[in-house]
Structure formats: structure tokens, C-alpha cells
Image 1 (cartoon, rainbow, N blue to C red):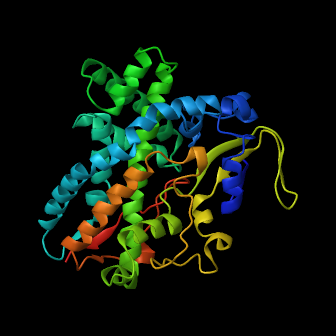
Image 2: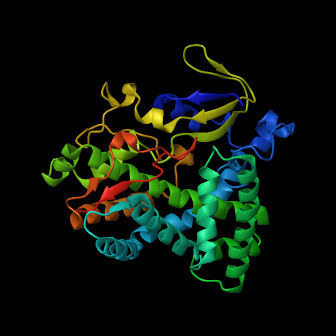
Length: 370
């Protein structure tokens, strides 16, 4: 598949707010309309879903409004005590690790915190259902997956989402799943497919984003201890760490897909033709020297300009961004306070990236706590 890659912040901002750019393949991508996309294509879930990620115009507004109530500033702030309790519990478990032992901090800390938070927000019960949702979400982001994995994941994710919806229909509560079900059954235009796909989007993206934010922030600080020294000396804050991580190593490297509704001419005479596919290279945008400066490739928590598009832009800005920032603002200082001698257990350059066109993190984050 051929697509235009947007790498400059200014161009991404321009096209993210341009009504001539759509996210709906059913209306504006000829290859999808003509049935040219195979069902085992690794990005199939990112295109086939019917939620605000693939909605255009009034459909996007309608679907976004149904989720927005779960991520208000008041509701996000109210979750802080719960985030703190989960964090403390995870740190207590880590503290029982024998001295000198190597721990995969991604699997033992960066993953379970946001998984527990997002599952509680959606009312997902403990046990097999959470495990299946996490496994399927990981697979959806695994864009190097073979055909068999893609097909199996597609089947499994809708089976577990149907199980969740049935569970919450029988046991409604004050959670987002129950709220979406109520909206569907109270006469809104939310279809059953949109209900399932909205749950898929917010649960999977809601935890994966925070996992990679924590992973990349810890990695950056341990790879360059001088940066952590700036925080301890008061020359930078934990918020600076979070924003600099989002800029230099955003949780999502690439954002697929958008489509030109009509011909779009950009500066320099470049024309994106009607029906052409478009991707946003968010990792590149964060290192755009025109937006950040000539040393944009360097991680520097004292940097004054930290412009990034890690959470999107305009009406397409991620609704869960405040929650991800809250989790990082709790988890990062708590980790380094509990384990001040925390160190990488392998050279930073040896850590392998995720096999993903979209998700930006490490397969493992081996550390020694003491």
C-alpha cells in the first residue's frame, strides 16, 4: 500500500483540521471501497472499525461526544487516589525482588498500571476477560503479525467484547461500558457495531499509550542520568519529563489512516490526490527542527520548547491524554523515589523496539532495582 507520510508539525496540524481530509475508508478510500484490502492485512482492524477513529464529519462528533463524558477533568482528577493505590501496590511487589535480580519493568510496572486503570474505568472484571483484552490489544498493535495471528485476533477481540457487553448489560454500573450500553438502548444512533468498536478503541489505545509513555520515560532517564539529575536538582519537573518524552519518543510513532476527499495542494506544489491514503508520522513531528529547534533529536528535560503532536491535534486530539499524563505524573516520581538506584540491566542501545508500525516502545525494559 502506498500512502503520503506527513512528517512536519505544521503540515500535520494543517491537514488534521482540514475538512478535505477524512478518516472514513467506506466513503473516501477507493481501495477499501473496491474491496482491494485483504482481511488478513496487519492494519485491517485500524481501518475496518466503526468508531471515532474512522469517522468523518458529524459521525465523528456524535461518537466522540459519547466517550467524552468519561474523560472530563473532574472525572480524571477523581481517579488520582485509585492510580496512587495501584502504583503503591505494584511498587510493593517490586520491592520484594531479590537484590541484584533483573526485572522487566515494562511487564511488571508499565503494563499493569494502565491496564488496571482502564479496565476499572470500563468495568471489565478481573480474570480471563482482562487477560484476553490485553492479549488482543497487543496483537492489534503488532503490525508485523502473520496472517494467522491477524485473523485469530480479529475473531477473539469481537468475541471478548461481546462477552463484556453481555456482562455489563446484566450488571450495569457507573462505568463507561454501562454508559455506552445505556446510550445505545436509550434511542441514540449508536449501532451495536459502533458500541463494540468504541470499546475496542478506548480500551486498547487507552492502555497502550500509557504503557509506552512510562516505558520511554524510564528508558530515557536511565540512559542519560544527567536528565534525572536535573529533576532532583529542581532544574526540571516531572511534567517536563513527561512532555519531553512525548515529544522525542511519543507512544504512537505513526497514525494511520486518513484519505483525501478531494485534491489538496500543499506548499511547494505537492498535491495529494483525491482518494490518496495519508499517515501522520508523529515521531517525526516531535523531532521537527522547524518546530523545536536544531537539536530536536536530543532528549533534554530542561528544553523550553517541547511542541509535539503525541496526542493528536484539534478535534482529533486524544480524549484520554489527561488520564495518561495523570498516570505518568504519579508512576514516574513514585518509582524513582522508591528505587533511587534504579539502573538499566542492559545497554540502552541493545533494547529492541516493538514490532509495530504504530506503537512506539520496547519489547522489554530490563532493570535492576538496587
